[in-house]
Image (tube, rainbow, N blue to C red; front, side, top):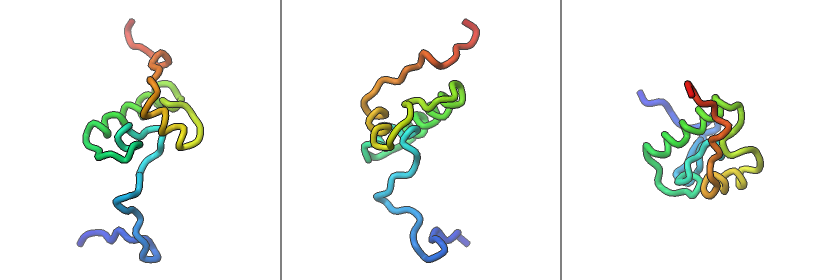
Length: 86
């Protein structure tokens, strides 16, 4: 039997208009509320891997709206990511 996706009080946990995720690892499409697909997942994975390699969020810290802006418009600084075998 499918699991009930309602919370304890019968309230839905998600809706089609909700954004799920943390701004630091969202794809530009998700931050702009555009349709997302596999490329968004790869972008988010890159953010997680960048964090794992450097210990810092790929687009810095700050308010969610500022992070979302940087995800969409800022260039990612990869100089802090360690290089292997060079």
